Length: 80
Image (cartoon, rainbow, N blue to C red):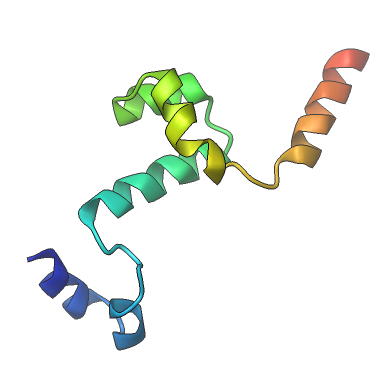
């Protein structure tokens, strides 16, 4: 059923791609988006039905490109 829905919703090049290959992929994308948007891990874990430990173990690799933001937050905290 899922594969048939993908054929109806996606362009042919998307159907042969890994995009939303499984329904779980949509959940994974949502949790990754929330983390990368800066939603605190405990909040994301609660919404996803995970413990924070499991959330960070599974999704830590999706957090990328936030070094500058983290550095600025640390600098701000040190000068506050």
